[in-house]
Figure 1 (cartoon, helix red, strand yellow):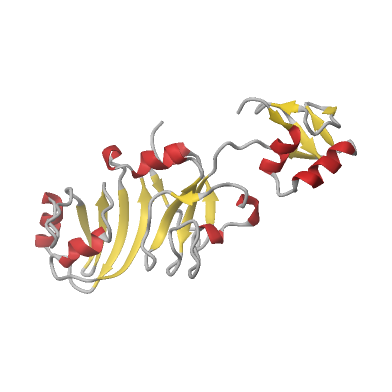
Figure 2 (cartoon, one colour):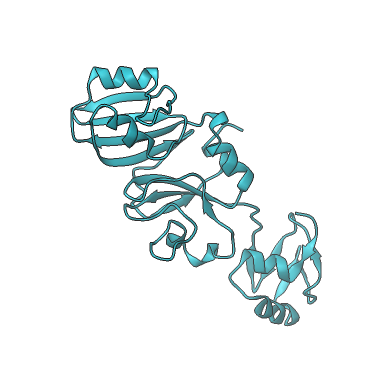
Length: 232
């Protein structure tokens, strides 16, 4: 992080405005490493212990959030007409440039990763890194051996584009687990469409090493670490 002004540091990590923070600092309500500091422009570093009004202020360079996206919510940072996954976050994240790393269709549910770490987001979404994504898919027809074998070999879509080999595990007559390492537009729906099978529901359960907890209700989220998703 390097050295940064005390008032800016606190502003970045709290919901207080810069003017509110300056007033509190001038009143002696702020300490750095146990020593009261009354200068807003005092320079602090990442490892400094900072308290404001008796509460510790923790530096967090990036955040990583796993959300169980509800149906009808967009995997986007903002939209003029529809609620987005970022809209579901509480106000304490409002000062961060948080965005969804990868997309999940509006009518699909399940795991969406949100972060403000652009480099990490690129790493987990770039096709060259082959990050697995696992989905539970409910269909309008039976899962046949032809479908399972076709996914394993790699499906050629109607537009001629080729999909990488994928796993299709039959869970029930009309339910399957699909595991992909790429993310073409509406890929799963288009892959099943080649076999004249429609997708009724799609739920993403896993990205990389991280599986969405069963206890996480739709719309809820939890902070995680990068190591939860991929090996460091």
